[in-house]
Image (cartoon, rainbow, N blue to C red):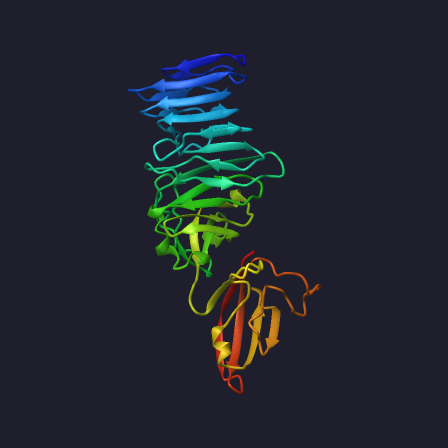
Length: 350
């Protein structure tokens, strides 16, 4: 198809040939029936419009190299077959997505710019977002409104009680599948059906968590930015390798009085490890260990000023910031001597 061509499919498309160098405009239209795209090969179009009230179902992949407009209906892919997806190829933009028009299944993006996956499930648009990349990369993703303990599509279950000790809760309402062989951050979204209040009492304790394929447990993928409230918001992870994790979702760190989360980024919010009880007990000693038991910080008469900078003997450069992760502390304190004690962990987030 040349750059001024246009074609409208009002019936099923079966592509068994080479149909992948198309310019111009392509539309899919039907008010009464489901349309399908099938065949041996992927069809790739330039600008695409979808107006199929009863949905457009893919039995082979469909590529879009420029713009996509949702007018009505969903694009449905078989969730059990990762070889079939709606492919955004060096995408330009898309529009019209909402709770009734999205990709019900897998979408794939190839490019280097920020991309919001227009994915959802069960009449809910539930996007996730990959940030700008340093080079062209491929990522694939889908959203599942399912309990990870009893997923419908996956053969394995992702038991929410099998988790790193620092993780307190894992969502039992939803999860995403993100595939890719290069490190990236990911931004997940939530709405009022995500039941965020059941995961964390405070938003600051939310983290992205992933089911590690090799260890068969949920691991903390961090949180570098959180927006919104308990009814609607976003959370962004640290960088991680998607293919190391079967699925990802939203979880929380333990929020008891003995566990702490600090984000030393000088925004005056959780910048330092603060023990409120020290205002009444002038004598104290704080020791912080890494997971191997090495001391990374030790201070007598602690002044609530630990901001993730190591002062341990094994530290080559004492100005180096400690890596993101979980550390353990022991605090001893009292009026005139160290008669009281407190132990727990502190998670450093950046």
